[in-house]
Length: 524
Image 1: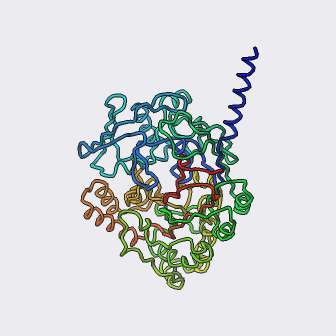
Image 2: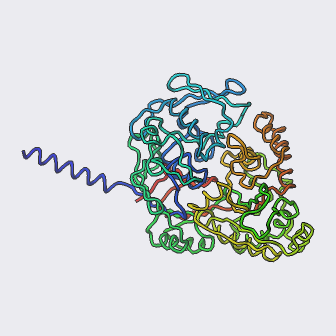
């Protein structure tokens, strides 16, 4: 009896020591992931969070180079066929083995109804299973950038989805939820322990992860703190360890704290404005029976009415780079000779509106998020003030992304602000989802204003299959020039990343704003 008692006491001491040594990371972010479903929303924050729980076949490492994850190797065996060797001895969080069946299921799910990730798998014709851990991905046409394209296509467990009635993605456009909204069963380094949407989500380290992680974080407490003042105060008081983003007006204040550091760097995201160019009549406008945005003179007037340099200096406090193209200079296919913005000229804008038949301007609603980008609402307010000077009355509707995304993704908007990160670091990731005429397979999925030019569509298809880089870049430039001349969208700027981190934390800031927790280390 005494032996058993001593053994019990020893076990309790060991358990207590283990709990005491557990390393917890507390993250405060402007917004929350809207779902734990990896196929529900193609949005940077959403992807950042869920990719700590779910994993793709191929990913980008801390040097932003392609690296094997659930696939160990891949090669192009035919112009339209890529062979992937899948990693063996990998288990989902519920201990179900990972196999080719899960990849095929995840492909069907990601391309199906309700999925927001169609653009990543839209070039895939089918996936052929060659045993339990080898697959052939067959593309519609030769597609040399397939590995780069699937870095955010995450794999779900077929068995778990079937048992939990989650075989279809959570549809943010229709407000449809299922078990995958709140629960998760990935292969990733962290598991969902507790989920309180818009309040707090707790993640714990996966004890059976297939490889050793370089970081030492055992638990992550993720808290959305939408109010800038509250978020900054939480960082300064030590309530949170990492804050993202830092409001640009508070950067110097946080830098002055000896226990904190501010991490800043260029992001691959371009902030832009989109305009409905399809409807015969705008939504929420005083102009009846006409759509002013169909007239290139109106689009040009909007462009020239925006004082981007003042937005940079006053709103962004210098933490942005004005953009003339819909992709930053770090992305393959960027054309430097097209990088000069049209001049800011409100007088020219007024003349264009008169020529287009709107001497008194017009009224239109502008949809804008207020918890997604750095100073997003302030940017929209500045744009609205600029447009007011040329006679355009903007009814600004700034709202949380929980209501903003379902609205704009269902195209219930005439004028909106959005940001796009070229996550593949290739221009095709802009041409296909943003410039192309909306169609099947994710084509034009985020072209929410339905801009359309047949020549751009033709060039996009050619870019997808061209292997000669010089020819390919020439095609990309031509498509970019056409879109620029059409004023298909209104690019604003490339924003900078602003993170606040305690100095005892080692973390790498990546240009797509992702934050893989498995690489984070915290010193006592």
